[in-house]
Length: 257
Ligand SMILES: [Zn+2]
Image 1 (cartoon, rainbow, N blue to C red):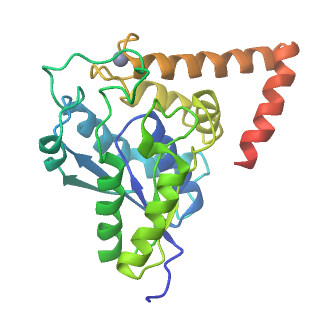
Image 2 (tube, rainbow, N blue to C red; image 1 turned 135 degrees about the vertical axis):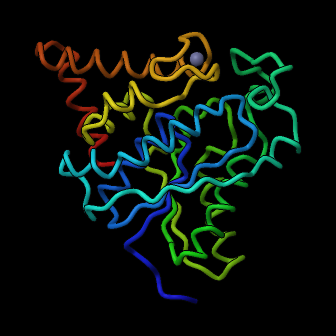
């Protein structure tokens, strides 16, 4: 087994709210940050362009915020894994399928891309291994997992073990957002000094509209509800209302994570 590289982290980076928060989290905690963006036949090519743009400026933004522990820029890579969209049909990669607005009772919504995180994290691990990187970072969350089974903690831990066994390596898959909801993810972004950047320069919307998005799709609704909840807490906190106390409690809780 090769010696462990504790300095560098590879972030699986889509350019959305969650992975951008993770990118800045990684800049705060690791000397060197590499970002890997996957293309897999997403309807919105803009997503990849935005990811590249954020990665290009992230080092500088984090330096300005005093939260870039290595002081360097992010090294950005793009990888084509479009075979994923040939394997199955889902409404994210196939525009002829109408997108589920709610999670159906019998299973995940049709925005679920089967195997996506399995492939992403496995490809990222091989990519990392080639560069002597052990730390992988992904923005999956069990709290707001939208019914996607591959965002759950048990799956990520099982895959982490499999990767280590399969390549005789010591990968550590970090999931900074696993146990926090969207409001707490906004709080984390705020503490990293990038709430406004994430609000206006990331793309989470399933209809491909940056920033606050279309406001109608499930991703926009989840993102907006979280933002409103977080901003509500901060407003209440500043006006010393009951919610302020609630926010402070929550802040302490998220600071631990
Ligand atoms: Zn939307």
